[in-house]
Length: 185
Image 1 (cartoon, rainbow, N blue to C red):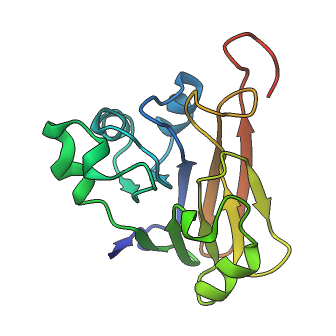
Image 2 (cartoon, one colour):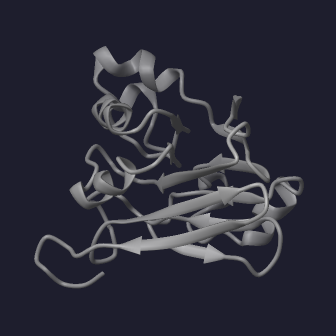
Image 3 (cartoon, rainbow, N blue to C red):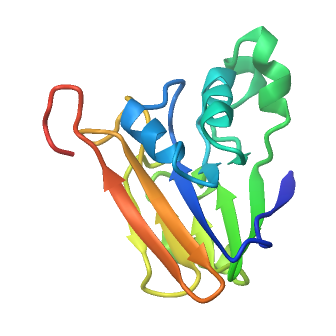
């Protein structure tokens, strides 16, 4: 299932990009989300509480289902929420189109050429699944994985990305935070 979203009317917006929360949004990531106009979650949300927290922090929440976002894996009272999540989100933003999917259909080590071939008209493809932060601007569309924004396999600390989008220019800022034990990510 594909769902379309429209963020394109503003001249410029800030968008937080998160993925792989696995039921828990890290506080540092939540602070970034609270400063943005929209947040994109690239799947493996693993609980309606994460979506509710994002909705409290940010006016626009766009989320897709990951391989762990199946009704049978969520609490019975949350199954309608997870069943409503699209597999793919297409977002019209100032200056171009963003496509969001979890990326698990391409395996644990996806080749970015596969994303580019699947979504050639996008300016940016966002995925999750690997828990590893990647900012690939080598070709178009750009391919971004924000890394894990929770506490599961977060490579030493939670990660996210900040998109600064305008009709003229797009900027991507990767963000990494300290792990709970104080080690740098």
